[in-house]
Structures are given as C-alpha cells and as structure tokens.
Length: 336
Image 1 (spheres, one colour):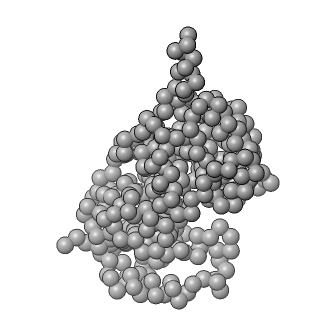
Image 2 (spheres, helix red, strand yellow):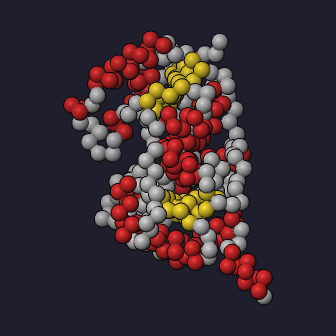
Image 3 (cartoon, one colour):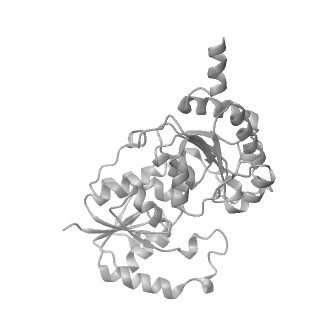
C-alpha cells in the first residue's frame, strides 16, 4: 500500500500546471491528495488523473482584502482541517516559501512535512529545504522537493510534452490574472489583423471583462471560456498560442502547443511556460520589477511601452515556424 502524500498549491492555474511533472512522478510512489482551487478538478482529468483533488479557496490568496479576517470562512476551514487530520497523511509539502502553508501542514497533523522556510516557519516543518537560486524557475522548487522524496524530475528542457501540432489556428488569449499583466488590447488586435492578412486562421479568446471591448472592436467571434475544460477545448484546436503571462499560456504549453508570451511585471526566468519551443517577449525595463502585480504607475510601463511593431518582428517568424509559411507567401512563390 502506497504512503499518503498531501500537496498544497493554493494559487493560480499556471502554478498548478508548473507542478504537473512533480504530481505525476509523486503519484507513482504515493497516494496523492492535492489541496487546491476548485478548477484543479478540471485539470485533474487532463493532466494528473491518478490524484485526488480537495477543492479549497484560501482567503489569503485574494488579490485585495486578503486579511479581512471577519470575512474568512472559518467554519469551512475548521471542517477541512478536521477532515484532513483524520486521514493521517504520512507526508505533506508545499513548494512555496509560505508560512501559511507550513502552518496548515502542521495543523492538519501531517506526519512528515517538507517546505521552504520563511519567517521562522521551519518550526512547522520536519524537513526544511534550501531554496534554489534566486533567479531559478518556479519548477526548480518542485525538483528540490522531488529529490527530498527520492523522486526524479527531468530538467526544464527535457520535460516530456505531447507532440506539437503543425496545423490548427492561432489562438490568441488576451486575459491575465491581473490587469497589469495585460498587453494593451488595441495592439493585440493589430496583431490579429496582420495575421489574418497573411491568411492564418486566428481565434480570439478573452476574459469576461474584456469581451465587450473585443466585440466593439469588430471581433464578434471572440470566445470567453468560463471553465478550464472550455479553455482546453480551444487549445486542442490550436497550432500556436499567443497571450500574456497567465494560466492559459501555461496550460497550452502542457497540452503540447508552442506558446508566445508577453511578459510584463514578472520575470520570465521564473514563470516562462515549460514547452521547449516557448518564446517570451520581455517588456521594457523598470526599476521596480518584479512588482508582484502591484504596479506603482497608472499604466504598467513595461507593457504599455512595447509597440505592436516591435512584437510583430517576433510573432510573425514564431507563427511561421510552427504553422508553416502563410498561404499568401506560398502562393507568391508558386507564381514566381
């Protein structure tokens, strides 16, 4: 009988996708339970069907008002604590240097607890780990934990991925977890028009609060996926993905789709999608970068000062590399 392992990853869609190689490796040696946001249930079927997901929205993961303690779901949290404690997990871990995760592991009576201590949170851990180098990708934290559990994870450039598609549409997703990560919609719209001039099929997807803008701009076929499953259906029809530093890009990469990402306030060294053919275009320099999505300016200058012409120089060859020369170029060669 496999030992029971509890994994805590309470943050974004992209964070869960980055954890995928670890979750798969751990499920071969442990009975794995993942404590995560509810959309992890949708990811489970696609990425790690062998594990169990316990849905939980931690109040401290809200972007604003996270410490309004009187609004916290205390009854639900106490019930969850009791439920997990009764299951007597053999081991538990978090890949974040977050004392709240470490406290949860201790409060839930997990026997052996792994994590990266911060603010003296090693008191809650039985096996504190040393963090990777400051500029290392988030994936490296999972590799450290894998070694602690005698698991083997491949390096970033050797993660097995589904085979890339040499067909399909260009899927452009304009959303992001926070507005400061969004490249201006008008510039993204210009890329859509240029790609269509080259005869590529382009599908635009967006967050709900962006839909009206796209419709007013003439993009009446814009799609607004409401669930991870709806997003995966769009990704499965795509040959390449273009978008912001966001969860959909990470998900596209792990579904085998090459990604092109506009990076603003975060560092691409930390959060670049894991696909071997992922391309990232970094925004303009800023003395406050990385700013953890709390921009000091009225507009995120790192993205606002990147023009569509600058982006096109990189986007056009990226699309041609993975979907082939655009039909108009091919026709010109035949005519010549």
